[in-house]
Length: 79
Image: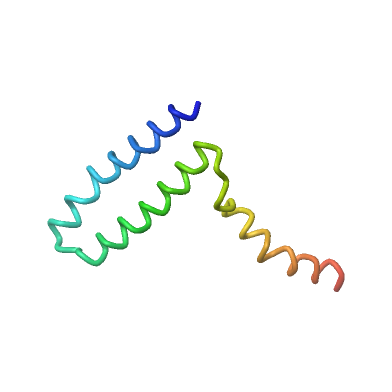
C-alpha cells in the first residue's frame, strides 16, 4: 500500500505541474510560481511521510481542534 500511495502522490504532483506551471510561466507569474512550488513541496512531503507511516506532521484537523476546542468548552460552560 505504501508504494502505491507514493506513486499516486507523485503522479498527482506531476499532473498538477503539467497543467499549472505553463499557465504561470505564460502569464509571467514568477512569484506565484515560487509560492506554488513551496506549497506543493510541503504537501508532497506531508503525503510522503504519511505514506511511509512517519506521522511527524500532525493532521490539519488536529490543528483546527486544538484552536477551536477551548472556544467550544468556553461556550459550553457559559450556557
